[in-house]
Image 1: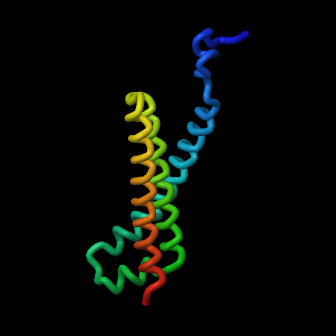
Image 2 (image 1 turned 60 degrees about the vertical axis):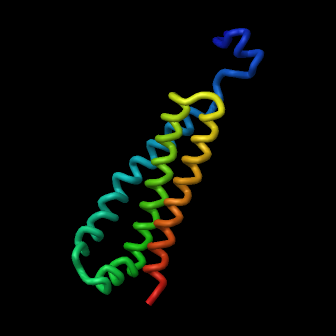
Image 3 (image 1 turned 180 degrees about the vertical axis):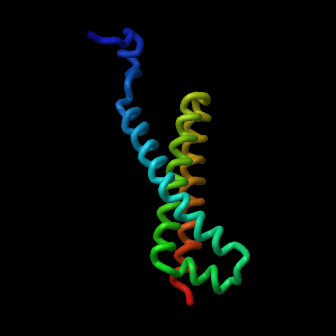
Length: 125
């Protein structure tokens, strides 16, 4: 039994078969952020107001640097996935594609900036 109309069948519209995967990817990234956010924020808050050398030493530690990199990558992936759903639901036509590409590029750029900053702190003396 098919639930698509003749028009949807003819134009190829219907299930894209990616909704469930996208749903679970967003839920897994949310759960990862529940763990990573406090692990990222507590060392940051602990070193707030300390000298440059103290903050540098804290994030030069491999565990803190790894957690910070994982946090930035996961946070901006989750941000993109959420914003993509909003764009797909409320924007249609050419602007939908333009906004999704722009959002993907900006999310990747911000994630790379965060990762670069942490790696620069971790690997410079």
